[in-house]
Image 1 (cartoon, helix red, strand yellow):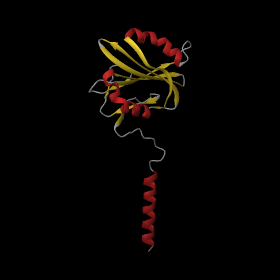
Image 2 (image 1 turned 180 degrees about the vertical axis):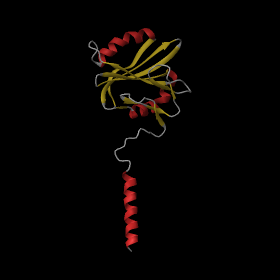
Image 3 (image 1 turned 90 degrees about the vertical axis):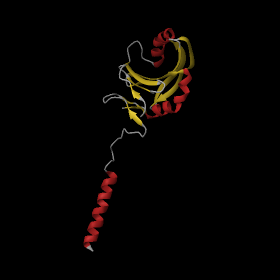
Length: 175
């Protein structure tokens, strides 16, 4: 009888140990998504498994091989003359308007959040090299840096990735 009690106690201890062995550990695995941000980045960015990591741009980015829709995150330090999202946008807007003919806003500076941090969202269309694109940019100011999430697609393909983009944004985290 003592052997049975000892065996039962040992089994209970092993079961408890296996149940709690993962406590306190963070996981970065998300079913159907892969992380494309490198170790040491101040954020985590996940994209669908079938998307292709793009290392040619020097920024964290990936694209859908079927239609070249893409996402990227750029980070820049706050400077003494540009300390707000509005100031950053005002400094960069003329460059966008010069690069795209037929530049038109769909959404201009609407407040939103990126991983719980107050941000602003800009969606616009424009033509470049005879192709019409739609871009969605979300800019957050976090711990002295501007983080710009950009989704770019041919305008006719833009809506096809709505669910992917919402999931990518939902999984985005600041570290």
